[in-house]
Length: 219
Ligand code: DX5
Ligand code: ZN
Image (cartoon, rainbow, N blue to C red):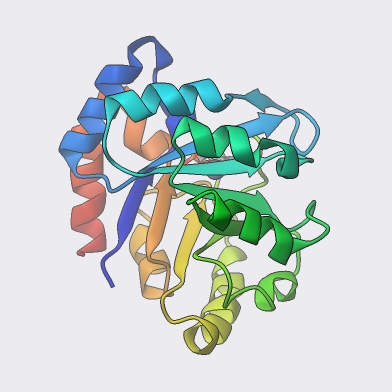
């Protein structure tokens, strides 16, 4: 399967967001990743439906929204209406995962679930056949620019083992500390979607940074 690259807007220079989005697109990214943080689920605040609306006007590429919030249920409608193509919620905070996945789908949005690095991977096994994206956090959520957690490879292997039977079409995504040094290891482990913040937007060189990442990954 082709590997998708999704620049995480959290790392973009917001004073020239339009240029950042245009450069990332020119570099050949596939989607844009937007982190939403509520200062409860994570110790940081970031973005709301407005930025999704704004980015929607800047690009035709899909927008993948990552809800790092305690109460995602109340936000699905607003983020769907703002123009999200994918909405991912955290398994740690959702009481009834099938219900929220259905709610997301009914809004015409692709549903995803995510898990933090200290949540056992088994927590998502029962949903593998009903999600389109599984987003594996490879840093503790809340901030860009952190170091990739090496123990993630083993977690990814366990998920890939399980998902290859349960849902061969699963988009298996990683988020946090992804860079040209670990990208091909991740892809070889079975990841087909890379969320990349700092390594894409650094030095206002998203065109070159994405092209290099694509070259390293080789597909
Ligand atoms: C972290 C966010 C990530 C972050 C990734 O909580 O979910 O999407 O922006 O940024 P880098 O690639 O800098 O780790
Ligand atoms: Zn994210």
